[in-house]
Image (cartoon, rainbow, N blue to C red):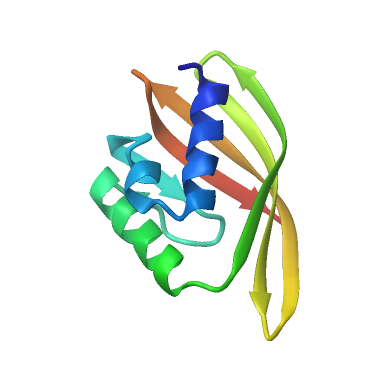
Length: 112
C-alpha cells in the first residue's frame, strides 16, 4: 500500500469510528501530534486516545482537501469541524505524515 492509500484508509477508519483499525496504521512507536497539544507516543496510547475521542468527543467532520506525496512523506491539507451547541466550528489545517516500513511513524498537524 502506498502512502496516499495508507492515509485514505486511516481517514476511512476515523470516519467509521474504528479506533483499533485507525491506530493499526501507526508504527508501534509512532507519534500522533495534534496542533497545540502534547504528542501521543506509541500505537497503544494512540488507540486509547482515538477510543476516547470517538466515544466521548463532540460530533465531528474531517475532510481531506489535498494530499501531496513525496516518497515516504506527505502533506495532507484538511478541514476539521466540531459541533458545539448545534453550531459547527470548522478550521483548516495541514498534517505532515511520515511512513517507514509500511506504517505511519509520525502524523503532525498544524493550523492557524
